[in-house]
Length: 199
Image (cartoon, rainbow, N blue to C red):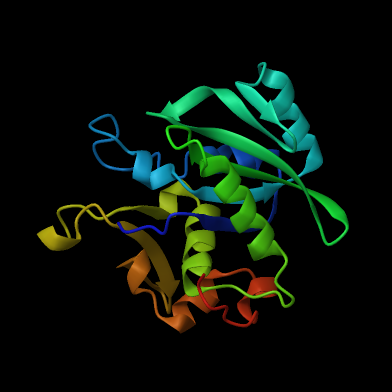
């Protein structure tokens, strides 16, 4: 799976239940405990509410605090950990979570810049990648997974999703969804947003 360095993975504001699901969006990946899965998580970010942000701040003393951000003391994998941001965007305070690789001392600042740039776009829009990531993030575990022996060897391990229509269940690779299938899987309020040019 090829992932861009810093990417928004959920549209809207995640509540507590959704936030905890988002912390491990890749829990079903094959060979979960074999090797380094840093690239799956590094660079993922989403917005959350103030209550969820404050809850995470109070769980453990942060590893560090720098102005409008703090890092969690517990690492997810390797040098990847949660960084929480409190950012003023368009005159409003908003809260975000991102996975940063602390082996790169500039990773949290780079993510902060990307979040601000993405969230200050004058028109609400979504890239194809953001649409796919939102579908993956909001689909229940029973309806998403990773390609197994039913798929050609070259496609195994890639993300798959169940599609429903005219009484049949169809399993497709997430990346292979058509524009019509993407629209059908998105919530109504996101279906007609204009396409954004990927940064």
